[in-house]
Length: 271
Length: 271
Image 1 (cartoon, one colour):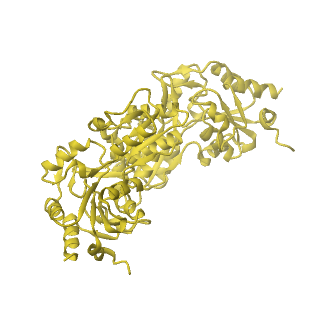
Image 2 (image 1 turned 45 degrees about the vertical axis):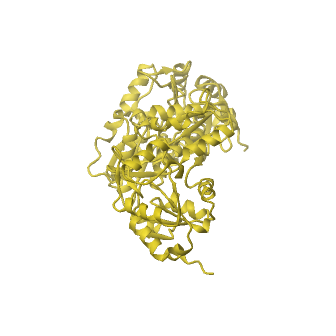
Image 3 (image 1 turned 135 degrees about the vertical axis):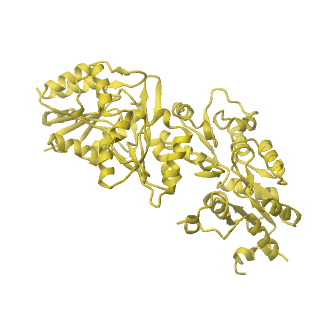
């Protein structure tokens, strides 16, 4: 059977993966602001027969904290539905008996409470934002350079994201900086890592072709999903830029104005 | 005739190129400290028949300032003997009518006094040290992202250098960060750019095979010189690390304990 493409694929869908920042809301001072129509769109999805998980590269705050923020913005989200990089990294740290030096926001520290951090033998870098000072980056660099075999974990590899007051550099930029400084290749947790998408699929009990990813990041959301066989649709909100629609290597299965439009198209094609 | 190698090549030498930081002195609080034996070694070179130029990627201070510092440390150096990245970048900016947004140390600003900086259409990044804050890197990033064709000049591409209190990240690390964030390739001024070495050669009126480069940076000093046909010797001072002697792509023509030893070997082979 021919691939029905977007939005024809909606008929066969059994689940949807949603990015958070730039799809549900724009971050910034305080709680940020909901993107118009997204609260209602999420409600519609939740009352449909589609399974739903949230795949985010949020690494500034612990899950409990940012889920509470989303709830204050009137989004129906619970911690158990959210896949984020820090818990995936914590599992790998424990599995490989690694003791991290953390270059992350204070808000993310609770995710690492159960991890031994004495005498570090690796570095974990998240979206540390204002904590990306020259001094803090030097400290992480020195830990890596003193290791016989440097290990660098990155909580995502995004280039930038949009806050209310403009675009901000993301963790991937500082990951590249440390990679170059120390001749090391980071291990990326979160999108676009295939393992990350697969953990969400397996939690839903679905196959890649039964699921659609909706995000604002062409490379990490859409491209990452596509590499796993999941269709990817980009929204024209958040960090979307018109040049994304002529990107040299990644082409979205569909591009929509916002989450509200995506959800209406999906639900209309199912009836 | 067979290549005499190091130190046999000293017989045919007509000139020497010296790096500054890590060869003459270690930088740090105040003026830094002279590396033992380097003041005397420089004196011996200056009284020999060899021509001498200084090739530095110093981009924290204007030439007048760091030459004055070297003089206070008792080194016989004058501004006209020094090749550094900022003047080379300034010439290119004027030539191409570019107006830079500067991400550099305050101490370097005088080098750019004669350049129009209104309504920037490119970014120049130097070793900004403490000024590499999250906010300042975001500002440079936004200037680049708003340009139809982003232009990024980097004053060197070093990974790190040694100060008295430890290793510090250098401009190349932040260059890589902006390259990744904006999908742009920086134009590098200073070492290891061949144009930069050639400008020093041409000022001396010498051919590559008549000149020897002495530096502490295996890739930028030694490798950069070698790519121009200049022999390169590494000193075991400054940022030197034992692993440099088994580097996968760059092999120095010789490795010596310090400048004093290099100069003694050169002068002994000439008599």
